[in-house]
Amino acid sequence: MMQRVLNRMLRLSVLLLSLLAVAPSAWARQVDSARIVADLSTHTIAIRTDFAGTRVLLFGALVRTEEENKPKPGIIVVIRGPEKPFKIHRKERKLGVWVNSNERTFPHAPGYYAILSTGAIGQVAPRDVLKKAGIGFDVLAEELARQGEGFGSPEEAREYAAALIRLQKHRRLYQEDDKGVRMTGRYLFRARFDLPANVPLGTYQAQVFLFREGRLLGRYESPLTIEKRGFEQFVYDLAHRQPLVYGVAAVVIAIAAGFAAAAVFRKG
Amino acid sequence: MMSIYLPIAEISVNLFLLLALGGVVGFLSGMFGVGGGFLMTPLLMMIGVPPAVAVATEANQIVASSASGAVAQYRRGNVDVKMGLVLLVGGIIGSVIGVQVVKILREIGQVDLVIKLTYVAMLSIIGSLMFIESLNALRKRKAGKAGPARKPGQHNWIHKLPFRMRFRRSKLYISVIPPILVGVAVGLLAAIMGVGGGFIMVPAMIYMLRMPTNVVVGTSLFQIGFVTINTTILNAVQNQTVDVILALILMASAVIGAQLGARVGSRLPGEQLRVLLALMVLAMCAKLAWGLVATPDELFTFGGGGE
Image 1 (cartoon, rainbow over the protein chains, first blue to last red):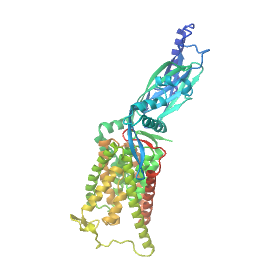
Image 2 (tube, rainbow over the protein chains, first blue to last red; image 1 turned 90 degrees about the vertical axis):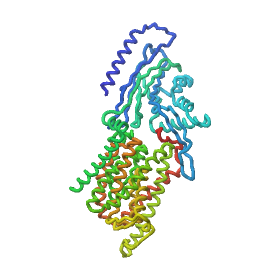
Image 3 (tube, helix red, strand yellow; image 1 turned 60 degrees about the vertical axis):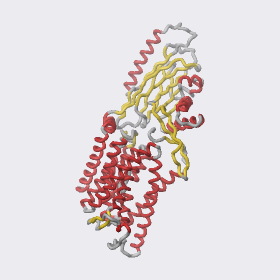
Image 4 (cartoon, chains in turn cyan, yellow; image 1 turned 120 degrees about the vertical axis):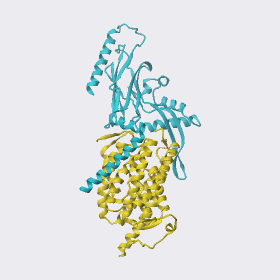
């Protein structure tokens, strides 16, 4: 693991150095040509029997820039998981009992959403810039409120969108950390984010945004796939593709286990 | 801290926690002759297993513990096979209906509520009945009288129904309608609540059918075994909610627990055991009821299907 991280760091450094070597020192002084490159410590996460969540590192560098004498850049990393529909109920007291009612649906909410940054995102960039780039829980809440189905009023839509984000944060599937991106020197940075054990399967996108003085200078995307492997994959596939075989197998295993135990305890 | 990832539940759980849960619930189930599902299913939901997976997987696990228990009871001659088959006919009907009911409830997002309400209703009735009955029995014994001996001549309305059948092992000659209805109820519960249904069947056999206590546990395990086989396969095919890995872990621990429990149980007097079981049932019931009426911290919740 560490070895792979180091290898990638090394590759990235070579990339960075070659880009710096190409860049002429007198390059357009007025235009901030800084761009960003990044990579993840892994692009595939295999869920096996011992999976208990994992931590992924993202590291990258500023390129095409002379950082000396320039204001410090702001970096925001957004990791977005596969989208799926979410149904949300608001509980209501009926005959003294709290009942799920008022069902609303968000057809495409991200199953995972993490924001990491070099500081509070409101300080990194102004609201309209963040909104245009689609960054932050405020923007996500607005996006959700627009796509929600069956809402009586915009206020209600916002209330449900906020509830979805709150519930997902509680399950650690939505996260934010404004100290999550750390600069190492002037050019290199790294970020890390946690994927909890209940993380949804599918394709993720890690987006890295580079800001300076509130302006978006560059962005970079890197994919991440989370999938089941090995025995976990086998069990899951069998259950969904051959459900009858799976069901009968489950029963046979159970009976065998029961009889085996009875036999053991009879002797013992 | 050794975690294990459950492929169908899609969560990661501490292995030792699961083993401990299975062992303790198995012990109680062996001691009382109940499936233990009514304790296990809510516990699984509490540690984060989705309700549908908890219910279906628990049915699969009960197959193992009841098969093991039923074999042990059969060897001791404590299974009334004929009565068990009659109960099973009802059980199959009930579980087929129950799986459909769950499917519909899940679509309208009310499956959790119905499961919990059913639990509260069932547990409060059964719990209080058993508590009163067993306390009375204890008091009579302390007063020096014999226990509630079965009087062969005693009849109630149940014995006036048609389609009578002779059950030699239970020393009964009664209509098949009550046992079939008991079976249907138990099958419904197996599908909806993820329980074997022993906690309703055992009292029904004792107080309603008036079966002798020694065949009650074995016969109920016999019926539960086959009903849960049916429920497991139905759930696997219709909902893909049976988690074999979770079931295996629970089986391994519960089967051992059940065997130990059966040994301890056979050395303890029945009335005391029933007081204990009644108290446990009432405690679970109170906890569930409180959860339904107390104002929740979070008014919003994810609906079924979207989770």
